[in-house]
Length: 410
Image (cartoon, rainbow, N blue to C red; front, side):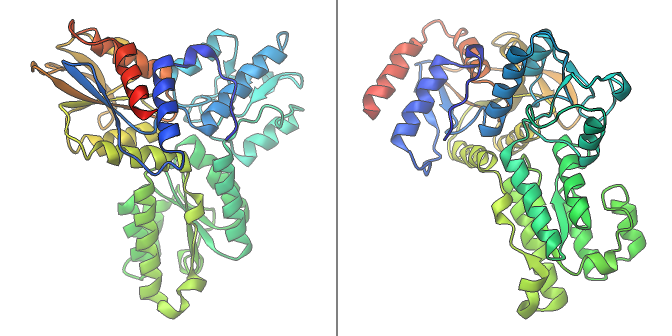
C-alpha cells in the first residue's frame, strides 16, 4: 500500500513500533486480537487497527502539499478536511481558511473567491452542485481534491446501479458531508433515498410491502429522497450503498432486511432482478477498525478510552460498540483527563461534555482498552497512553515493554 508523507508531529514512535510489529506478525490482517502492553500496575489493550486510514493520510498529504506549493496564494478548505479538531486547527493556523462548516453553513461567500484561489476538497468529497459552483468561478478543483478513493468507489457503484435502473438506498446520516456528497452523485444517476439506521430501513420495508402508504413515506423521508421520488415506482428494484464511516454490520443488516423484503414482495426466484449485491462498497479501513473493536471486546477491562473528534461518525460507532460492555470515555485529547480521579469526556447521545469521577479505579492492577477513530493522529493516542501511565509511579518504561514485545515476535 502507498506510503504517505504526513507531518512528523502526527506520528508516534511507540504506536509505530506496535503497528509495525503487528504488520510483520499478521501481514494478511486476519488476527484482530489486541496488543497487550503490560506496565505492571496498569495494562493497556491496544486495538489491532486504529488511527489514520488511507483516505485520511492521502488528504493530509495533499493539504500540506498545497500549503508548500502555494505560499503566496489564498488557500481554502471547503469544510473540515477530516473530523479531527486538532488537525483542522493546525491547518487553520497555517493559513488555510474554511469556506463552510460541516453542516454546510457558509463562512466565506462564493462571490469573494477568485480564480487564482486554491480550494481543497476534503476527504468526504463534495456535491456536484458545489463542484459546478467552483468551476463557474474559474477555480480548478482537480489538483487538490482529497476525496477518499473508497468514497469515490461508492459513487461509481451508484452510477452502475442507476445504469441498470436500480434505486439507490444510502445508509448514512443525511446531514453528514459524505452522505450529502454521495446523495448528490447518486441522485444524478438514479432515484435515491437515505436511511439512517435499521429502524428507518424497517419503515422503508413497510412501504415496499404496502403496509404503509406514500404519505407515510414522505413524512419519514421527505428531506432524504430525490425530488419527485415515487415510492410505488422507485422501490421496485433497489441496491444499498453506505456512508463509509457507518457500522459495517448495520449496513449488512439493512441490506439483508431489504433483500428479504424484496423476496417477500416479489418471490425468491426474482430477487436477483430486484436487489443488487453491493457488498463491495464497504470501506476496508472502517471494517478493520470495527472488527478490531470486536476483538477488544473479547477481553475484560476496567475501562475503555476512545480518542477522536466529537463529530467523527466512525469514532462514535466505536464508542457505541464498547460502551455496551464497560465504562467508556470518548475524549479528543489527553488534556481532557484531568487527573487519575476525573475525566472530561463527550456524551455523544446528549451532544455535550460531561465529567466522570471516579475515573481510574483504585486497584492493584488496572486494565485499560485504548483505541481511536480513523481521523485521529497516532501522536494523540500516545499522549493519552503517557498521560494515564503518569498516574502510576511504579510503571515500567515504554521502551522496556515495547522492546520485550518486539523480542517475543522476532
